[in-house]
Amino acid sequence: MSRSVRRSRAIAAVGTVLSALLVGACGGAANGAADGSVTLTFATYGGPYEAAQKQAWIDGFQAANPGIKVLVTGPVDYGKIKAMTEAGNVGWDVVDVNGDYGMESQSKYLTPIDCARVTACATPLRGLTNTRWRIAENTSALTLAYNTDKVSGTPEDWADFFDTAKFPGKRALPKSVGSGALEAALLADGVPADQLYPLDVDRALKKLDTIKKDIVWWETGTQSEQLVSSGEVVMGGIWSPRAYNLAVTSKKPVAIQWNQQMVFGSYLVVPKGGRHTAEAMKLIDWITSPKRNGAISAYYPVGPGTADAKAAADAAMVSWLPSSHLQGSAAQNDAWWDKNLDEVGDGFQTWLQS
Image 1 (cartoon, helix red, strand yellow):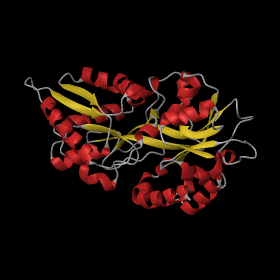
Image 2 (spheres, rainbow, N blue to C red):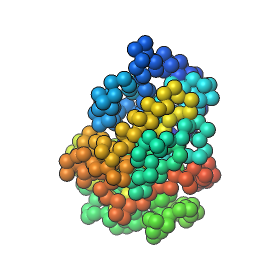
Image 3 (cartoon, rainbow, N blue to C red):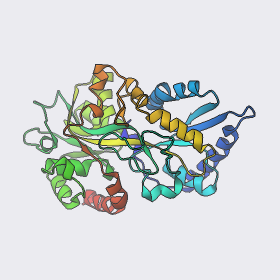
């Protein structure tokens, strides 16, 4: 799914806390039934992505487990997880999160994954990282998309992205600091994909300086699509499902370069204090099992999160999945970002304003 929509940081405000408590209260009433059935609340992001999750996993899970109903809700807000757990009134049982969540820094809000029940704990897709508190669900990527009406030739890598003499015109990059712009700059500057971390932030910013006047910074997935499809920028670093939407769904003059894609994972977590932890683990095992994990690819252009899973999609869709292009790819190091996000983010904001 588009990470521009999903890569939010956990900033809890008063309104978020109140909303979380209301969700928790409502969830409590729905979780148990007189007939002994259980209702799990699965928090995700709405739209076509949510519809794909239902078709790929939720519907089948409910059919196979008639005593468990799954209520799908959202959108996900990390602040709500914090508020629910602190209030002791947890209304979400399973939550779909980004790579910036489910790490050590959020562990006090999460229940450890029960790897005796979840069989895919040890087999995340290459480039993804399971932790004690999360397990990989699917994969997307920051990719180099370009407008074929505006670009003569084919950009081969991030070095070409930074070469405005070879490919004149504006560029687009995500403004969120942990969304791949620094990594793209280092790849363009010759750093091997497997040696990106720890990030040399000064070197990355120095490289970004070389095209700073030509960068348009996007803040939403919709904005990234508009920039590339309109030709306002000739190429952009955008999420792979967004590129698919442009090229395939909307039939815009947009192509994608998979070389040096930056792979990101989506993960599943269980908030601490939930009422139905055993059933939550059962749902997570269903979603991440090698037999079923690739089912979502038939409905939405994201790849499996489990290494042994096979994308259940036709050849045309498979060609649009990051998991089909891992050769030459880079991957975000979520553990490094978990420890360095605030410091790097402050420095990046200072650089943007300079």
